[in-house]
Length: 350
Image: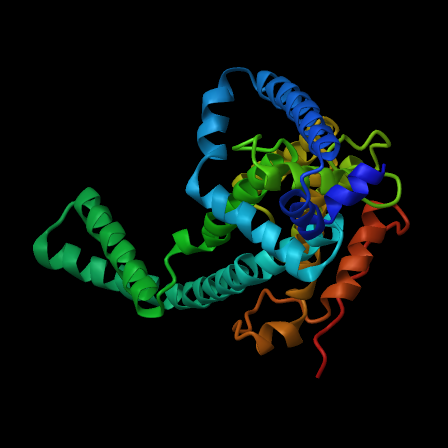
């Protein structure tokens, strides 16, 4: 235990190794390093074996430049904050998501609002195009098929003109995934590297960080390099992810399309599937996953507020809820069968 405490004091142990040449102490450290390296290599090999044919992929990703930068960033946040590793993971998660995914989410909401607004212009444009198509049919003696082709092309062109005018291409509505998925992958792999002393198990810094993680947990998981045998964090992660899906579903003011229903069911399935996965990985990763999901849930709830949406520049739309939290609570009660019928939505405040 004393050796572990000493190892957690990174500057002191490095100074002691350089200043004092005590053979017995050096031999003890070397033996400990060998044991730690051997056990880590076995754990890493077992973990990689469980991934089947993805070993080569994981090794490439583990040694990639973005993961290396992420490892360095996590280490620097831990060193400069002075927090235990579990708190450093939470802090870094909130920091990275605030810098990367929160601005992208706000931008995505702006794009969605613009698309909704230009959609309101289309009925008048469609009626005008119908009249023009009818006049062109008589003038040029077109068949019904020719007229329909020209009419559809005209509608498509007018829609594209509106999209260009307001700079709101529908592909931008998934812009959050472009930032969130790489961030999630890189931070997960970086934490896995720190736990398993990768990519260089012989590095003294890697060994010290891994040792710090063995005593850098909290409560029922003091050791972040082992799985959460209580399953509290994995189950919490699954519930939070399900809550995100349900909040998005219940705050939708328009009837869900078939594609949206399929997407909701897919995300529900992934939320449940991630629970057994989280039961087999080191707790450091699960702490990160729970923190990331918690941030996502808080972010979704915060951006329901009309005041917050105006503050960040999201335009007001017809589908926006005037009293989102009251209406969300009523829908939760309905799903929980606490109410026989969902009361009608409250009218907008005058």
